[in-house]
Image: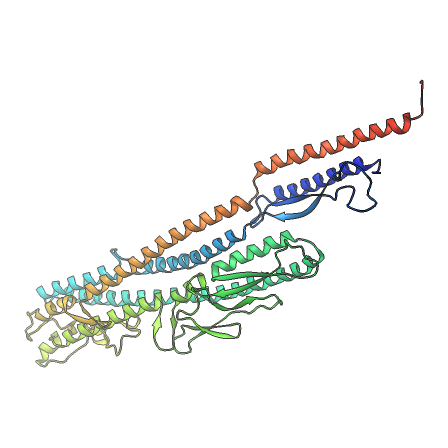
Length: 506
């Protein structure tokens, strides 16, 4: 026979379970604006019915329910959406960093503008044309020297600014390597805490949230793959387990394990070439991975490597090394050609002496490497404007060589292995930079849109909706009140039975 207090126990369980649901609901509301928080809910489970199946069970029409209990507290999270989000986040990390690198390069080049290299060189050509009209004019010669100095300084500024910004991206690369190592250590600590809680039959939801938040941050730095292993013991079937984080390349092939189930963290160490200082390889998980395309294709670390520059030991690759090389090639070709033409002319001192002595307008450069940073006026031109060779025939009023010097801008030159002229080459450099910069902005916007969509999908499942929580609050409150009222009713029934039984005629 069932207990007289069967109904009381059923109602008590109802009150306890609804109260648990209200407590979890309060936790959700309190963390509605907490970054990375995933809403939780109580899994209501019916308790064992009465009577159980047995030989000595009472003969009643059927099994009766005994109430409800909180089975476990679950996170509402879709792991597939996490994978989708982290994939797009890794791509966004790459394109955002690349867009920043190119934006800063555009600021340095400052083209088109009235103060960029192009307008500075144009002013130089114009001053040479003016000198050709009146080659003996000391004022015109001074303007040529000043504009020549401005051209050299413009090349110097571009080279030094590119190198300084390149160094900034090296510092950011080192910081990002340190950051991913720090995040990996923090994630490993959370992993170990989870491994200590789950075997006791508990679900550490808040630790799961912290781990997912760290994984999101790591995914912006590098392309990762996450797998989970049961922590053993009495871990519930719904427990997430211990996370293993693997770095993968663009084909999904493993580059090594960042965090494993044994509590090991394999830190990344970047190696720079001893000769040119560019990134050469990364030591990771017992392997040395070349960065010339081997270290993934997404994530901000990959983008920073591309921006700062990398090498296979001989060639230099990357956004900034590429631009520095082009500017050096241009400065070398310009100075060499201009000096060759200048040496063929006569300056005032030569005309006075009656003997032609070749003079360089710019200091001679031995090779293209570093040419833009080294470009400067020759000592002779700095000493006197009379050393500017404007005459082609040795006559004082002749400006034929000044015309030839002004025509250097149209001379066919071999720059970086291409036959072109200075203006076309520089326009091509600026045009290519503009194209890849525009491409990076377009990809940043497109990937950002995909990431926003993935985030919205994830939030639609996992985020706290205050409207929904308020609705549930009313539902659980009414259920709690109903259970309490049920206890009151049963109490009144028992009071009538206990206190009124056997009393007749009163």
